[in-house]
Length: 513
Image 1 (tube, one colour):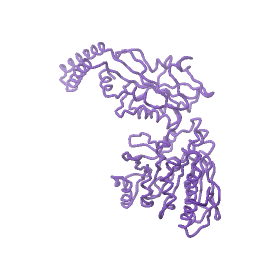
Image 2 (cartoon, rainbow, N blue to C red):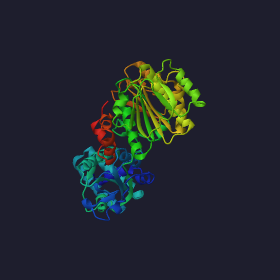
Image 3 (cartoon, rainbow, N blue to C red):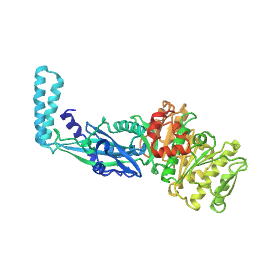
Image 4 (spheres, rainbow, N blue to C red):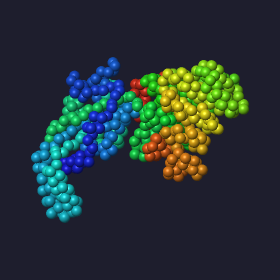
């Protein structure tokens, strides 16, 4: 890129260094560039972390970094976390020497004048006008700066799979930052990221910050520009999540992906304490069976453990039990709290009794949170939520209203917003609305605050409108998590920890309805 194009680009750049200084980047591997090169350089540079030797794969951008949104640093850190890679980002600050720069622009003006006089082409007249404006701007303002992005992906030494993963991550950074990255080899890392002085003068590192393998949120899909959509954990879950859509649109697969990622967090980070899946239909349970810590398949005569049956609990239980005339399920003293991913497959109960079993399981959590307090955050993932939301649905409403302060977070799915009362909708902060087939569905979706609900008729299978709190809705292509959840319990979690199977790889192999 010629110098005047570089300067034009940098004039539109928000100060990335300020963003990075305010970006919180914590996690498993943070490496100072200068510290990393003390023991060597280039291909010989390595760091040892928890007994594993990591080598750098280095990428740099030749073009200036643009950041009109003012949040590029935050987005890049979140990208590294969401795909579980260890990364050091660096921005290199080029400070132009004004005299050299003005002299360079003068030379370019002379060349443009000559080209215009020879050809009279409008292209050269526009270039000449631009160069004169640029000269005046540089002459009267402060010294201009340019930013260059460096990306160091730290991979286990000698791992071809990790090198392929680094290349895939590079492509994602290119999309996010809007620049082209080239892999470089140099005598040491600093020389790769901070080249020798050129026309712009001296280059110095303006900031270094680390992205990590820690996953701060739950990936659900991509927007129309290909950017990841990540639900923040735990913030977006505290106000609960509602998933709506007709059969066959992708609700169950999405729930499996959310539950599976939460289970991995529970296994590796111990937060959430528990993910409990309540499935009256069985499809979700089958997807998660190999990842689950425990799978329960209640039979007729099953009693749901509850921590207390008198006082407030007695009143709540009587309202729940009184709403169902047929019962092959009862209650007994105990607790359903267990660490990890616990799945309740209710398909072995009579169809008419699956509703009461699902209601009692949620009620047990409500009583537990109210009476004793939860040992940590608990997420209840409920498919076919229409089964437990008829009438007053006091247990469901209580779980939503009080769950935020009690550490009980609800993710529920149902076929239409009309399946649940207003008290449930108004206490749902994040909405994921799949496309539908009928105008009655779109009219029901208007209750969710989607102004352009008619767009739902045009969405393909696997796409949805995602609305997080008061933010405008975003059209998203949801990820098909089939490959992710079918890996099995130990293999899935252990390979995730090693970084062999990642959400980034899932994005490439499992995008579907």
